[in-house]
Image (cartoon, rainbow, N blue to C red):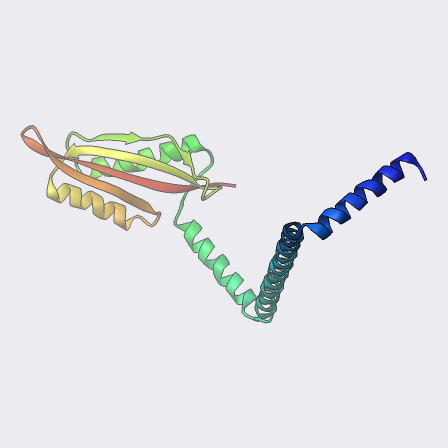
Amino acid sequence: MSEQAKQLSIQWAGVKIQWQSNQRLRWLSYLVLLILLSSLALEVRDYKLVQQEALINGQHRLLQVQRTAGQKEWLPWAEQARQQLEAFNQQLWQAETKGIAQATLQAWLNQHVLQNNIDDARLEVEKVQENSLYPGYWQVAAKINGLFEVQKLEALLKTLDDERRNIIVQQLDVKKWGRSPRFTLILYAWFQPKE
């Protein structure tokens, strides 16, 4: 027997003697063993619950996919969505570039401000914005300031409402400014780039 084996044998004999003579050591060892086994049982149970939940979710998803695949309305729905998109795109302004989009809206608004005789009118058209929610479309905002006269402003708003291309009025403010009230009209239009 080697020297190392002898030392191990002596140490093991010491442990056996301590085990047999010390009742608290035995109880503590049983308690530690019980805690370890309980912990292991809980881990196994948790793993089993996670696996069962994953299986149930997978089965539920499979049923949804099978139900969806069994529906025959997909082609009519797709055609209806395409028609709605075409109708929507026909209501948008068209421009080849962002600069042309800005100039087009400015020219159109300027024409209608003049036609409706808005006094002391100031027109500002902002730079074209691209919206990350609607890629492929441009938004052009504008602000019109002028003297407030009910009939003239009402005629301008009617012109905006009658336009077949969408013009969205975001805000209309009327404030007393000096002797006569003034209005501020903030609006925007969506453009689709010409292909």
